[in-house]
Figure 1 (cartoon, rainbow, N blue to C red):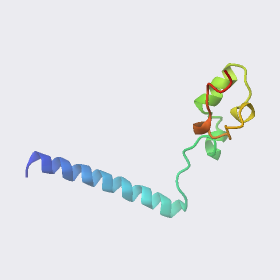
Figure 2: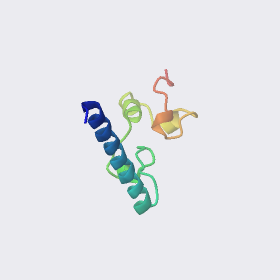
Figure 3: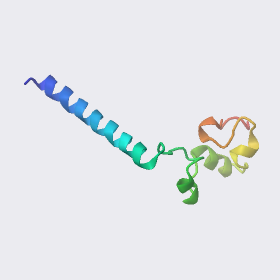
Length: 84
């Protein structure tokens, strides 16, 4: 077998392994993994905040939900330059 064929087969096997793993997680838990900081209850319980919220708190502003109508608590939607 050539080296390229071996590399392609290993890469395909690794991708298949991760797809099966994520599918099993979805089937066993019944929902997708919640990796968004603003909606993940476990991250909130541990006090983990998004970088935008930490920056706003560091410059003496309130939570991003209170400073912008465009920001709904979802850190991906916050604009750090909005208050300037």
